[in-house]
Length: 320
Image (cartoon, rainbow, N blue to C red; front, side, top):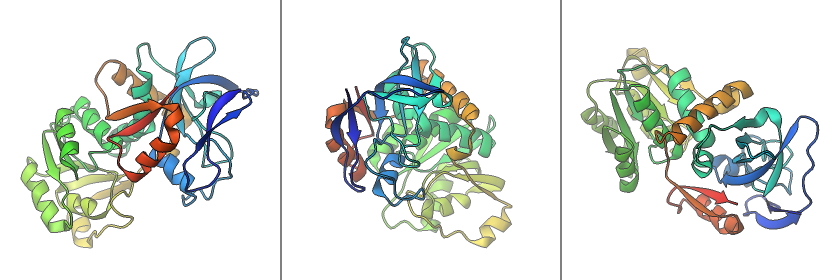
């Protein structure tokens, strides 16, 4: 028998249950789980209000995790839990399609790789592929307190960005952004309007910015657009600050700006695997990190509520 976190009612935290050992089918691998993060996507799917529809319950949540194969090989893996019928990573042992398993480089820290996971993949792909970042460019990172934002600061620096400006609500998040390599930080204040925030961004920037990485949308996105150079790009990955943004036509047309949407769902399994391996390599070498908290798997109910309420100090990772 294995231990699993089972979600029986959408909107409620999962509870620990005992289940029979999963049996791998053709094309699947058995993974002994080491770590499973509680991600925004997990919470969204489990709310029953995601764009994937209401998940079939009961199910085991967890869209990603790390662990070991039967021969001891360390791996990262992805699941479709909450998006399609089936169970996810929050169990002591899981079976996963081989295409969704990525073998990790030696020395990759399992808990950190779990915390970074698809968030760091999104940051890397958004900067490099959707955003076309090249060395010597200036980057604004919105939502710098989240894992996507934290990863983007470091990955932009690794790509040779000449200046990275991090925007975050809390003072601890801005302090952490500076520690991770941001050249300047800008506070997002309660009741901010587009003009005021754009003014603070201009003051922090060394001339017009080339690229905005945007996991928040809303007012911050509209303000950042005003600081872009002609032909500059904004890549949107989420809507933490609001589902709509007060973007004006004159700003878009006057600067011939490019606004691009990005989602990891557009990646093939091969593309995703390559990005995960790159993220894990940076983590193993000490070049990439993110604020996270490892808690015992048995505390999943409390941990789930803390992550959902925003009272956790960083991404919570369930350790097995």
